[in-house]
Length: 574
Image (cartoon, rainbow, N blue to C red; front, side):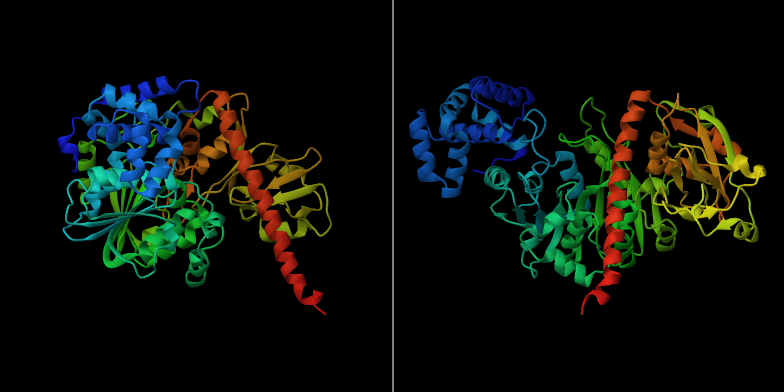
């Protein structure tokens, strides 16, 4: 029998009580994992619907009536606790047990690992965007415990649905849920999505692939990444794995098909992925990008992006739905009304939606974060005027090239100078040029330790924090602001982290004047509103930021050594 959501009376209280009962029964016997809870409820369902009221008889029934893989799965988790399944079957109705398995692993069903669950609201939004029709072939790459498959099968009996999941336990749970709640035209396979046959194509694809996966981990069992690197040079070893997953989806998409994926926000704007974003945009592969609210997932507060792929797109639709949700204390939810609003924004311009052409994207490093392009007031919590945090601010010395040439020293001295070109990826070069001496009139342009440096002209704006040894003097030169901060109020590295964020970028963009040569005025900069949380939080953010910067420096040093080694290879071979 096929159980549908509309036929189930899903009581959150009953679902919660089932979890509480299982935890109470198992207390003292070990960790109560969500998979164990699910297996026990499934076993209880089998006991109740087949009139089995003895633990040994239930194990025998399972061995004789389900697949070998299913029996192994149940026994691995529940053999020592199978009596609890009998107790659960005697304490709850089958409708309650089915409701539990239907909503798993959402709220009240326990915390699960990142690869397992997709919030129901995300599945529903994806289904609306995909606009699935009868007899289409649908796929879920990385199907987890079957959330999307379960949702899509409710109203799409005549579509063929395929799911592939690499985690054994998640795959088996999704098979059980598909059997109970989905139509017969569902296939769930245990395996690596990168090993799906090259010629297997789908009309519609969904993927909530793992967050934060490193590219090196994707080579474990397939040569897909190696082949992709050969045919798509825009992908580098440092490219975010999000774009490798996205490439895979497109490789399995019919020419007139559509795919939806959930990716991390950073991959939509970081400099590492600029080239691959450009490739996708140039080839018309991105239809829309939707910035989602934070705290949608139980396992992380990270903000995510829904990206829509299709072919022959001449522009990209960008939607900021970060505030379109029902706010919760621990978790936010996109309601059905919110979904209707987001769908409307796919076709209607406004403060939260805009269509951006190729030229505009090119001028913005192919950043796909909607906040970069939407003109609205950036909301800043605990905001203060930037000027209230500044002890002093000056411009870099305006020296002519001929003047600077006369001052430059070929030999190391205790005086160096810094121009905007010496700031790359938010860090100051360690090989700054030297000056013979310093004219006393230029002393006011010296950069102090932990001064914040901000470019005055050009976009994107450069931001850095100077770290200067006591016996070294560095002259600031060119179009930059040299800002001495009140460090009793603000941590300089925290402020840099803010200006490096999309919110910080959007804040700076709001005070920019000029189009040919964008620039920031001193008065506008002082009036800029910046967030000022307690110093404890500032320090926490600053520490994380500096740790990541240190990691980048180590990687840059390794890269430099590798390049030097490459240049020496020819002479080493005799």
